[in-house]
Amino acid sequence: MSAFDHPTRAHASGGLAGALNALAVEASVLIQALLSPSSIIQEVQEVRALQTRADGIEATDPARAAVLRWHASRVGLLSVQSGNRAWP
Image 1 (tube, rainbow, N blue to C red):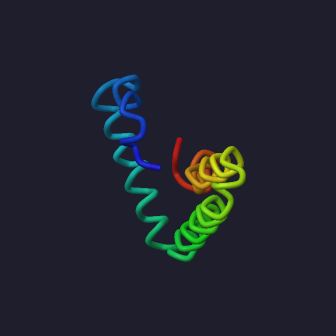
Image 2 (cartoon, rainbow, N blue to C red; image 1 turned 90 degrees about the horizontal axis):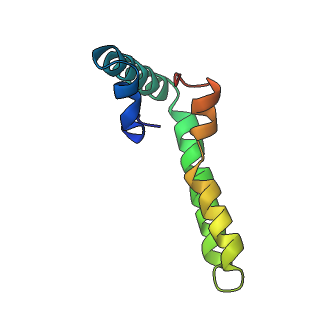
């Protein structure tokens, strides 16, 4: 997850201090991704599998397909928020 997804976080945290914190978080996430590319590859494969399943059932069950796409859009976010990555 990028700090750009939360543009108000730096502003709400106090300007420069918030911006520096966001930069540190982004650097930490980047370093962790570079040190463990297999986790990134696994997340991409999971997203692709969910999207493929959604494509396959779109015509018969569009609501279920939408749920699968929603889940695909959130792969990786849970690990970022739970602390497996350096998101505060």
